[in-house]
Image 1 (tube, rainbow, N blue to C red):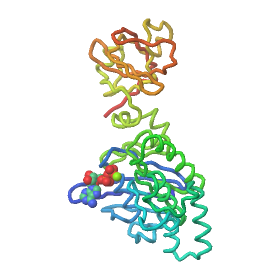
Image 2 (cartoon, rainbow, N blue to C red):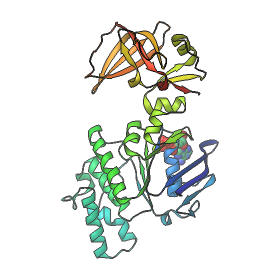
Image 3 (cartoon, rainbow, N blue to C red):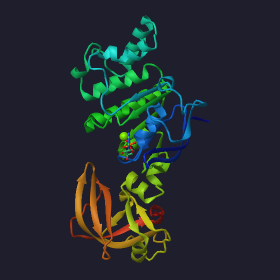
Image 4 (cartoon, helix red, strand yellow):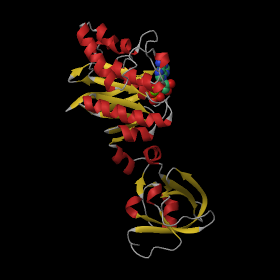
Length: 340
Ligand code: ADP
Ligand code: MG
């Protein structure tokens, strides 16, 4: 049974339909990511759930109740935004305790809960610091603690890590995931970063221009994108027009495009003799190479002008140079047929 349900949600700003009859359902305790490029409607949907924005059509259910028109303050939803929205004139402890005070929780309980939260987000020793005395990462951990201390039904995180540098960001991704999982909070995380969505989520909803393009687990989305857009956004796929691919490989793929992940492309100076039934093979030339962490990325080009990116690990048995002619072999099961 779903804990949160969006049914036929539309949102218009004037003539502009920024959410187009969306249906989403989220189970209790799930960590869902809304992924998509800037401007595709992710924040608008979160704001509708939080009651900061009204919907034009459709309904929202939370824990079996219709909350479509419920007052914001009654929805029991915690939020963290990209911009650190802490109260600048309050200490870490006061910021975290704020929601409990509003709810008129007694002092002893406030003290206990605040202390527990400070430990949970690893800010012991900084209880009496003001936001300006903290780094961006620390401020976001205060914001997280402040959002979850009141035990909300749902936690909404709108690009909370966008302003944080790459290394720290990876660490915070792990921390946030383990904290919300430990507490079992149903969480909706918003990002435009595919890698972030992959590591954070139980399931991903991929947004495209006010519509849901595809939804699934990170592995499903990565290995089986259904559309051109999903393949581009999720896996850095090579996307080739089927007519060109068919003439290159003497196949008869019927879809409009073929999508191939860079790491499934085998390259070698000679044609692989075995397993030809289940593979396609053609000749290419290396036109560029680029190192990328522990991966080497080759740009390959065929005689009919098809360009492909292939990725191999640096520890590979053989590495090749620009200008070298190579045969490409790809298992047919890794040539995904994509339609639009
Ligand atoms: P995302 O969070 O995916 O970047 P948003 O939900 O913020 O996207 O915005 C979706 C679309 O709605 C954009 O085209 C944006 O310009 C438009 N939009 C958002 N808020 C408003 C508003 N208050 N008034 C008019 N248009 C808005
Ligand atoms: Mg946004």
